[in-house]
Amino acid sequence: MAFDALETPFGKVDRIIGGSGTYAAWSASNFVKTINAVSIVGGDFPQEEVKALEERGVDFDGVEVVQDGKSFFWSGRYHLDMNTRDTLVTDLNVLLQFDPKLPAKYREPEFVMLGNLAPAVQISVLNQLQKRPKLIIADTMNFWMDNTMEDLKKMLGMVDLLMVNDSEARQLSGEYSIVKAAKKIQAMGPKYVVIKKGEHGALLFYENRIFSAPALPLEDVFDPTGAGDTFAGGFIGYLARINDTSFESMKAAVIIGSAMASYCVEKFGPTRLKELTAVDIDNRVSEFVALANFEIR
Amino acid sequence: MAFDALETPFGKVDRIIGGSGTYAAWSASNFVKTINAVSIVGGDFPQEEVKALEERGVDFDGVEVVQDGKSFFWSGRYHLDMNTRDTLVTDLNVLLQFDPKLPAKYREPEFVMLGNLAPAVQISVLNQLQKRPKLIIADTMNFWMDNTMEDLKKMLGMVDLLMVNDSEARQLSGEYSIVKAAKKIQAMGPKYVVIKKGEHGALLFYENRIFSAPALPLEDVFDPTGAGDTFAGGFIGYLARINDTSFESMKAAVIIGSAMASYCVEKFGPTRLKELTAVDIDNRVSEFVALANFEIR
Image 1 (cartoon, rainbow over the protein chains, first blue to last red):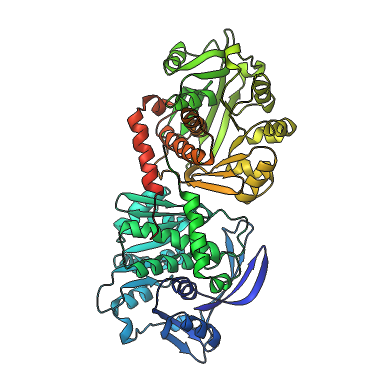
Image 2: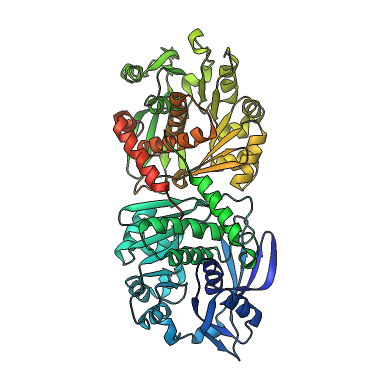
């Protein structure tokens, strides 16, 4: 849970709420309550943001507040193609001292999402659980591949599903072919692999089966920040609601995650996510059905 | 109808049958007979290739043979990502004198595919038709945008559907967004636009509706030559067989075209296409159904 400063071809914001946990919680809260958040913020993190999420069923008992510290801050500028961006500032701030301690009531979750953080922190959360969850999904990024590969491999051995983008999958596996990359990642531990391809949709791999989800073709992407975390939140929130982890349900969850992400990019930060109604989500999911549906005769 | 020399990361061939018409005819012949071919070849074009296509129901009366001329020859080398290639040699040969004259029996087709050639040649074929076909689809490429844009615009005003890849769509429209690009191309004439995205599948645009077809995720692409023409041949061959041009049918046709293209890239040139049985095609189409099918509950 953090602050971002964002610059896109459509405008800029100097300070807006961000962070993997924030996006994932906003997204998942459309499908399931209670969501147990684990994070660390500074005394600067706005009370109204906490309240808004609490009203959506997010529990903050696992969010450590360092009153005299500052929240993580990231500043980035997107290029015209919206697929590449320059990081301008990364201030770790309170994240430097993040050593999550799960409240007792958090220790038997059925569905766990590990946002993109140091693999050692992700592992520490899993080690505090008192029973094996039904589903553990994890995100990661190139930084951890470059710097903490041993920890990352250990984490991969503990999770059910890894969610990465195509370039991350290539780096992690050393394979250019996405199919080969997914197979290698599956061999590292996760039975399921989701590879996100931005405007080209997403692929879900399980055993020798593949599901290909389209992306909604958008005229403009206003701000892609948080789209991946919003996808993950919708994905796991939907699975938690239907309380099922079959491959068929995961295919639907990829569509739900894609629908949520397609809303996220319409406005800066989580602004658009905060406005969404159940009807909005149903309508967008119907658009995906129309987009992907065909019948051979 | 031509010869190609091809070099891919998997090997090379010095001389293999190629050309838009050849790939499209092999592909379409799985769905419909008779196919009236319009092309020009030299005396070097092998009789056994002609015979093999005739046995598949391809009529060669519209294929001019210049006995003392040489067939078009193209030589290219693909890069490791298979999305980019260098042209090593382009010998137009008999294409320089190509001025198609349609046999009388060719002049009332229901379904017409204009392969990628000079727009003036494409227009000349359409001008020889005695009634408006049910469906005219056309391919083109950046070379014609750079050199014969006025002719190309005239051609676009005469066809129902344009089939291009994403970079061609961007160049033709001047829009980076694929959705905006498709809208601009629709405004130039074609009611339907198909944008091929290689390993990311294809998009079909009609009015404000969009269909997104996946590509089969392949471990290896052996040789992408002819995949676009094979797609087009499967697409129009299927529509001709069911004799329908509704949007619903076109969605299915995009899947059929994608299935045919996914076979094409498995071996050099049209080699794999020549081997295919009806069972092979059904199986591959079923793979696409499994790949794209989902149900939200």
